[in-house]
Image (cartoon, rainbow, N blue to C red; front, side):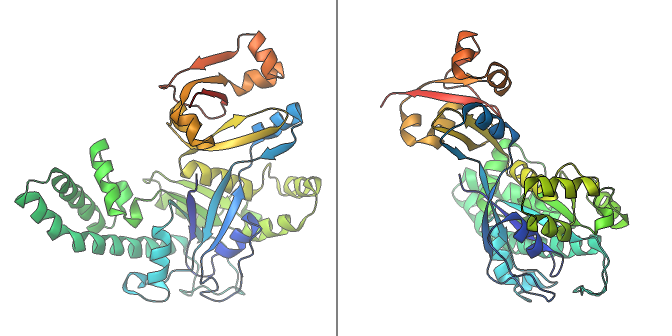
Length: 366
């Protein structure tokens, strides 16, 4: 399941440094605008303590963790919606992503220039929001008259519903709000996907701070939290420079000691990867055995046959049933055999909604 989060932000806010920490792919990081021109794509392993525990129990021949794709996109500047800087390319790249990781500079450093001359993460957020909103308005205006004619001339029900949604979006965008703030019913959400608006994408705000602010944040972080209070969005505090130092350490023990010295339990990179996974509305089911322990990515709300199809299309096509063990039971009893003996394997049919952490075995016949 290939879904992407795009890292966006103004130039010189720490996007590429953060990307380098996330991925073995090396994006160029330098102190000047437009350092990143082509979007760099990294396939990132999702940290999962559950998979690690299953590996400890099974000692399998191979281990396959869940992954998520992160894209480092060129820095945006004011006027991007009109083609300024690398605006057109930026907007095209972000349109191809499923969610947005918005990096905001929340630290002072006279040696790192700011494209607008001074540090103000709330202003920076509004700059990018405005450019994306302008582009979405342009998308709606370019389509609006055509859909109105279709809805009137032939009584096209889809076009009528689309016009209704565009009216709601346009009202929000003209008032300076992103399209994601508009509440739509299920039918409206279905037709809205056809518009592919930039500001409907879910967003995660990452406050890039100095070393002294990684635990408790600072006044810039406080301002960001206040600015996004009405949005359904998570705010993470991360020190990209510190994460770069952690990435240079060779052993797990060294990294943990470094984190403990800073007063942190987990690296910012791990927290960010997990947050990106949640942002994409993704969950994990597991398969375990002596040959392989594997984490499989699925969309939250999927039913058993759909998740079976992630392993192989034949599994979905010939689905009979799913045998499900809860992770806690598997760990407590120590094997599939003991779970079976204890009656801890449930037999589920086509309507079963798979839960995060389920250990699955599918029966099928093609």
